[in-house]
Length: 185
Image (cartoon, rainbow, N blue to C red; front, side, top):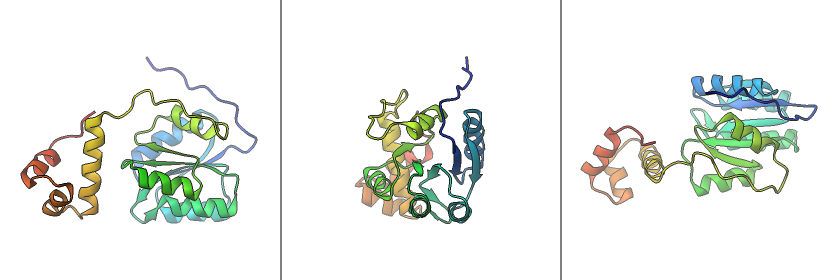
């Protein structure tokens, strides 16, 4: 049973930029955040997001880390140059400590793994500075974290199975079997 989204107390300026190259996810997230009271601009490229950041920087932003034409961290830097009080959440399908640190150093207030729930995003956007976030209701399983890591390394190795297996210190056939399966829950 779905619960109706509640509208939290939003500041006077509740403009929000959503940047994600996954059209279905971007559309769903944009609708969910609009239902929660935000004025959403949803775009699919770093270039479009940079234009919005330069011309009319929003109060809030939810940005994907890796996109076809660049990196969401570039948008964080531009947003904070134009509007230092902008509150930014980074999303990624490839969560790791290095990218989380880079996002926070660039000025993001939080870093969430995809698929992030709209309620979790709103909580992070509206959290008081210094407030500890609640633990996730549905954290990724250890198998899913392992699978995400393997997929990330595979992508970084330009989909070269032999190179990926070498870097992960695993047998090539074992890696091929893992890559052939669906993602664990």
